[in-house]
Image 1 (cartoon, rainbow, N blue to C red):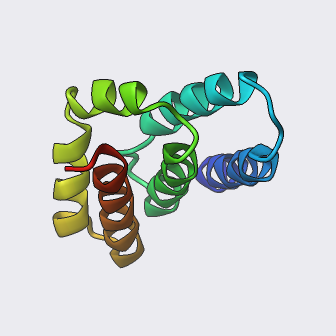
Image 2 (spheres, rainbow, N blue to C red):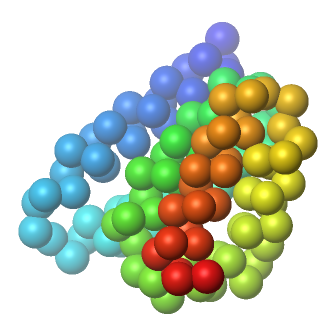
Length: 111
């Protein structure tokens, strides 16, 4: 029950953040950065549904945070985790989403 609640909570916050992206406020980047960090903390959850929701939240945040933010996270193992997850996660949806997030980050960082 806890995993289901957590995954739905992360998905709901992702939707709210996605819908708020058109609102012109500097607070949105702060919210996206904080939500990225919150979601990142669940990246290696035992439950695939929670991992998938965390990756979805991270995907939502990528286009909203600054390049400097992503560079900072990339230097702390984010890229290696996404590469590993996209190749070896036991859940096919998590593998695909990790690959998508990694590609999005690479595109934003031009690497």
